[in-house]
Image (cartoon, rainbow, N blue to C red; front, side, top):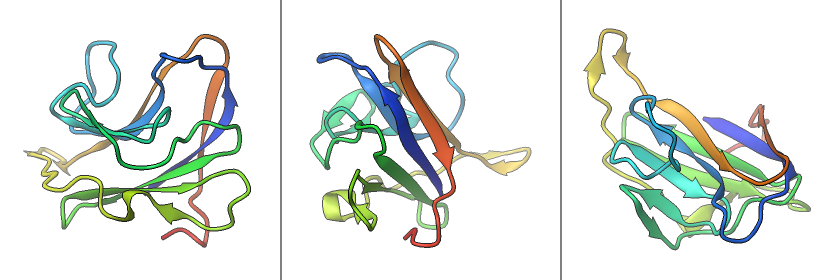
Length: 139
């Protein structure tokens, strides 16, 4: 489980902004998270899911200063869910009211199965995230 908070956001329209997700390996090229078939992402700018270079409407945008997003990966089930706590909200909301991605099955490696929590940022200006503890109210 990983959680992030938006600290600064000066993105503009038609710029991808923040993407939050996981990958099976670290990419060797600069790109928007979710473009490669080994990545699963939530697009902060519009709340869409983004995987295998396909964007699908799913949840709410995350991008205002103070907005939070929580990624919950269940390794035994192979699922990834996204929760948000937008500015002014007291509780985490399960986006899309369901699991976002299923059948995520990392290959076995020398250190076991590994996934990487990843964010991508495309921004003109100052855009900053902070990795935060999920807190006692985390789902």
